[in-house]
Length: 258
Image (cartoon, rainbow, N blue to C red; front, side, top):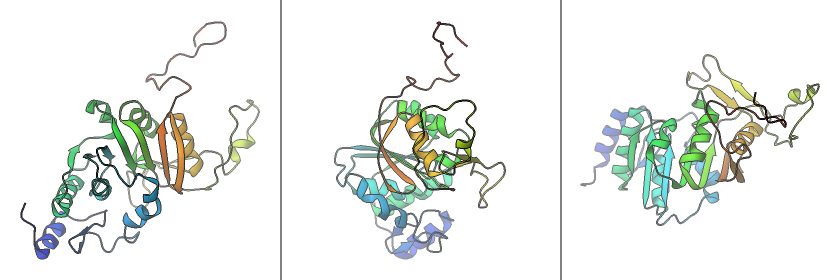
């Protein structure tokens, strides 16, 4: 494809705006006034070392790809195939344009995280960055990714609020124990009924302990936490044998179901 002149890039990028991803497109920044600074590059620099530098021959699924920043970075690391999905067609137009300008071959599709089973494919690396807290059903999303999408490496990043402590929690507590729920390091998921930070898609905001606990509950083994909001995981066994919706009846010792 014929390279675009910088003025053409600037004009087309502006027409596709506003951008949430600030991407350098041949010297044109797509979101130079981003309230988080050079985002997401400033975030990426804090955990890029935790992902394989060489993804040659590998496949990557970027869930909630937005303007395509991370999809492009995965392609730059040599991934043979990168698929970016998002439910926002505006973001997908931005991502396709960014990939074209940068000169990388990336597939983009309008799909939700809840659609990953329909892909009928597992990917070597699955990115789930900045999506969890935008979901009404976040644990279902993690279950679906674990059961249908990821083959090897799962990278999850979520906005977090509250105490950042990763506190050890017992496997069980007696019914009379209530103080544990008041401890700031206990896994907490705050529900946003209306709006947060001007965004009515911010539904559930975990503390750091809750992000980790949800990942473990979904059957992921956390390998590292290279940046406070980022967890690098691999699929592992799940004690309950996998999520079932509706829930599987619980069996008591006498064999009776409830």
